[in-house]
Length: 171
Image (spheres, rainbow, N blue to C red):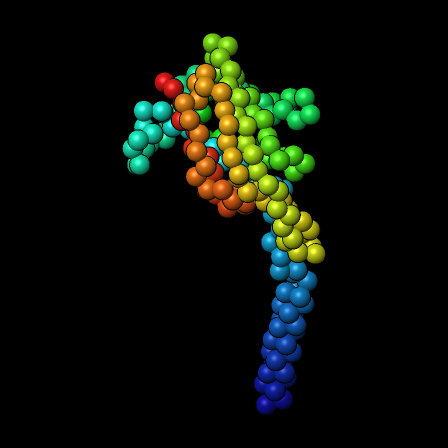
């Protein structure tokens, strides 16, 4: 009988230790899921210009080589280098300027410039994760070498995946 009571006492002690250990581990978790990069990207989807009238237009893959440069203060940075078969682009947005200048270099030495006007929206995530920057698209301007037209689809650029800009290219 004493042996059975001792086993029951040990089982209860083991259960209490397991519960305390679980609570201790759970208490160490900060509960915040920080986005590692804290960067929101401008998502541009490519379409063929003839699909512009069709509301259910299909995505278009540019068949040749595409390079995209971001120009800030007169200096350019290659964001995408020699991408073949591009159909969608994820591009960073400037925190310090209200207009991003994107230069599209196509095969055959063809060049277009897309001016993406936006406002910057500081977004407080938490004390653990800090700040992030969202952006509100306010306007688009472009040259017409290969770009037929451009349209803002979703003006808010944040961490969620959605198509922000529709870019219609001549074929």
